[in-house]
Amino acid sequence: MIRILAFSDIHNDWTTLRTLLQENADCYVCAGDLTYNERGIRKAYEIMKHTLNRIYIVPGNNERPETIAALFPKHVHGRVLECRGLRIGGIGGTPRTPWHSAFDWDEDYAYKILETLGETDVFISHSPPKGTTLAKTADGKDVGSEAVRWYIDTYQPEYAIVGHVHERAGIVEKIGKTTAINAGRKGKIIILGSGAQQ
Image (cartoon, rainbow, N blue to C red; front, side, top):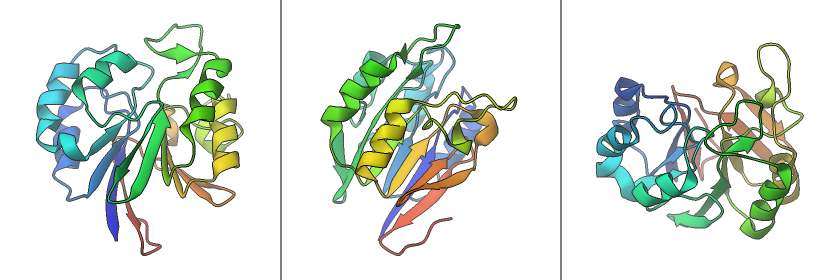
């Protein structure tokens, strides 16, 4: 049995981050946006450094991949690593918006990353998949990624952990065999090997 704590979109809420990391877990999965515009990334690192060997992370749209890669050895943007035999991989950033975030991309970029990623058991994406409730903003706009949806439809990981759309925090949706979750800043406990999820 493997216990995962998944979370996203902390945005400099250091009290919440400290509380999350007090939860006993075999691995911590962060779907990005620890900070706003990378302000405070060093502070996040200082809080998380005692669990770095268990933190699997992708950058959000407010963080550059090179910054996350420099601080977090188990970053999984565009690569797959293992946690107790589980394959964890993902993609950071989001589809391009008019606001020009620190890390946004066009769908061709995302397809190229995801086509080389291969199979995962736990897929992490800051961007939610297009065409799901996870991708709907408060005004009903779908801000999800076509490439992320393609990856989930094609590879059917057991879990997909996403973030970005704050108002969808805590939402769980099935996409074929995949359980897709916007973990949000409150986090979600996922227990693999027992069929249980909190």
